[in-house]
Length: 121
Image (cartoon, rainbow, N blue to C red; front, side, top):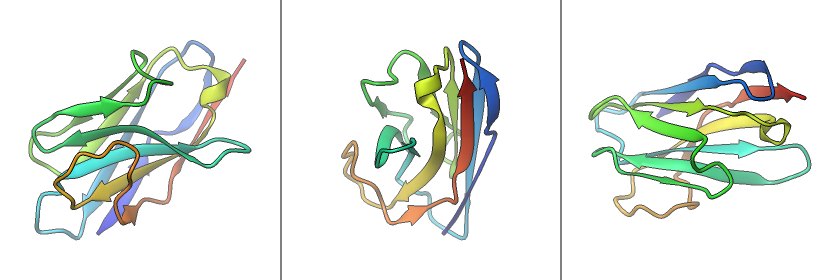
């Protein structure tokens, strides 16, 4: 399974960005797809997860600002990020999990290369 993220870039505080992730190489629908991020000086942080049915979970740090969506029953997800803050700066990663258990913060085995998001103050 290969995951390719896109949509990162530089934005001013208060602005918005939309990230996308497309998975290839799997004949099966991926049950769970997630976004994580790695900010300077920290480890990889879970952001949000969505299942095939569209049910989603969010980390408290980004709830109400970020929205994860999924093309219905496909292996493509997006992350709409609004009201961005400098602390949101980092590399954002897509993750794929073939587990059927929605376990927020527990990543699956497959990662994308990441896309850089920079939020200026």
